[in-house]
Amino acid sequence: MVSLTGYLLVGAALFGIGLFGALARRNIMGVLIGIELMFNAANINFVAFNRYLHPGQPWGQGFAVFIIALAAAEAVVGLTLVLAIYRNFKTVLAENLNLLKG
Image (cartoon, rainbow, N blue to C red; front, side):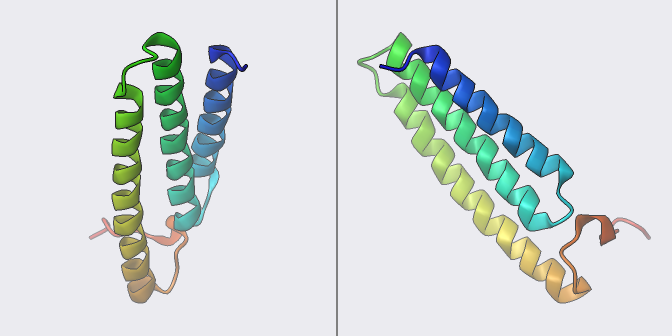
């Protein structure tokens, strides 16, 4: 049986990989994938804490389902924005976008 520390280490590693992917990628799709990894790391932590601190309660799983729904909505909006940006600028590299310049 895996202890709580094992799950938290996996969650922390997944969050670190997602953070690195979100900050180091030039492609907008890579940034979105990094954000999804960070959401999944939060899900692992919620479910692990629920399992070891409140074994009979469904709160950890409920939060995880809510985050999965939130991540799905984020993916839809993000992919829509990527398609719109690509149609207008013919690139999906984040460094080439200067939308706020007047």
